[in-house]
Amino acid sequence: LFFFMLMWRSIHHYELADQSFKGPLRLFMVVPTMILFLGNMIGCVASLMSSSSGSGASRGAKKRMKAVLNLNKLVELLLIFYNVMRLIFFPSKYIVREIYVGRTLTNFLFIIQCQLFTKVTW
Image 1 (cartoon, helix red, strand yellow):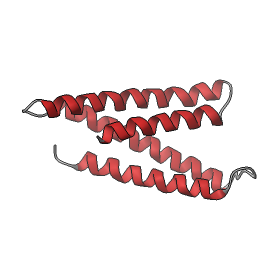
Image 2 (tube, helix red, strand yellow; image 1 turned 135 degrees about the vertical axis):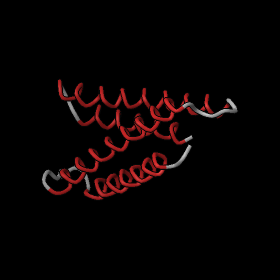
Image 3 (cartoon, helix red, strand yellow; image 1 turned 45 degrees about the vertical axis):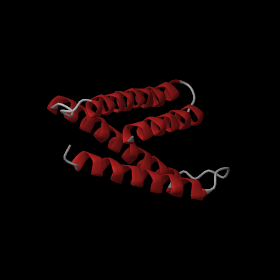
Image 4 (cartoon, helix red, strand yellow; image 1 turned 120 degrees about the vertical axis):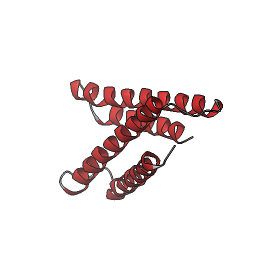
């Protein structure tokens, strides 16, 4: 279920990157979010497949799913950095500051969730 939520979260990241950037920078920002979406989708399918079999996921599958969670943590950390930079150094007069504060808190909550799932014993 958590990988499914992360899939939707990566779609949200894609939409933000698509709206925020233009030109070659847009491609540089959109492609990693698409890779993140594919990783989350693979993690979702792998977790569903491992839960349907009685033996559980193999050691390699667990490592791959934890790697996807670590990638999600990295993306959320980069987004915290981006939101703080936009909040402090590059504020926009068209976007209220509370948007960046809310996004930063949401990023922090997703980092904590990913950390909890990474450290849990499967």
